[in-house]
Picture 1 (cartoon, helix red, strand yellow):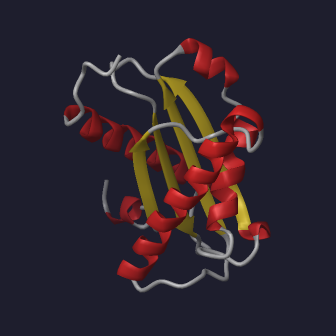
Picture 2 (cartoon, helix red, strand yellow):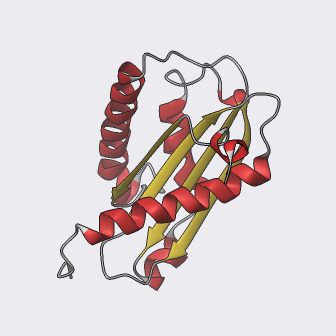
Length: 158
């Protein structure tokens, strides 16, 4: 894990207990709008802290949803789950979603007894970034943050 691994760290990453809404109408309409608002504020704050503007080059997006129930796993549509993430990043981190040249969306059933958890990362790409390495880094960072959050979360959330 030398300096080559360091160059693949995400430009921005966050994780939070909860679910990324996979539908923007019907029963999830309210949670979809709330997610757009909350996640948008997180990105705005992070970009301000790091004095970053929009990237004009290629972008890699990583989204991982950890779910605690099999029924939720079956009903969580990854194609719809990524839509609010792309929508929020557009205009904040990049100008056009055509700049997204690599995208990984994953969902898993988690074994630890806490609530659902999501991890989202974005990487501003240069010419020497390896998408395969970025995928591995995404899984590693998501699990690392999940383990950290699960240690500080009460286990009696049922």
